[in-house]
Image 1 (spheres, rainbow, N blue to C red):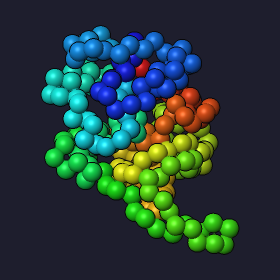
Image 2 (cartoon, helix red, strand yellow):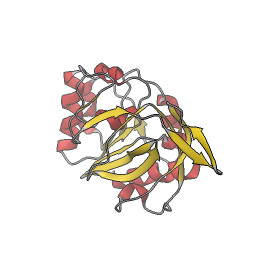
Image 3 (cartoon, rainbow, N blue to C red):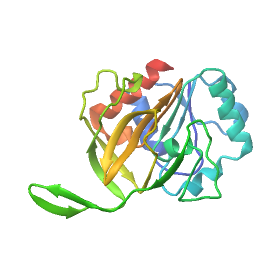
Image 4 (tube, one colour):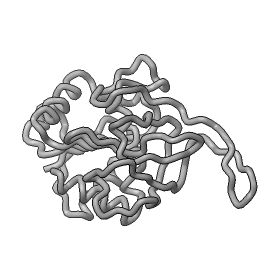
Length: 206
């Protein structure tokens, strides 16, 4: 059973539908103690980093206990950012600290398209390519340069934990992996066959 964490940050229904489509058994725990028997945890979310404050100390401890027992965890979009130490979007709100570094706002810039200069928009909304600096279980069977769907204004830094990098103004970590902890900045539930394959690969890790 995969525990899908609901802390009021949205996109729960679409993630649950995508997981059902690949045959995953999913529960939405009502209290931290419900995580005791979870075989894996997914933390989704969209919006401001402040929303992660909805996961209080009891939820944080329960999730860290699942991770400490070697069971896989996946953060999606805001859930990936929460894996880090924090974000400049909400400096007083602490991240989970499983990844090193701070999330920062994407930079505005100019993107060359067909010989013309186009201003980059923030938030970064739409399809963009994945580039893989190293192998990851999440992307088994997925080709270099595959397109996935993003919607965000802040992003995680490119560190040694980055297993996919995307560029919008500057490179950012579009996926991370450390041990049994995974995160994706894009929305696999909105990324067609590639997104479903990412979720299936996570399910295989579980």
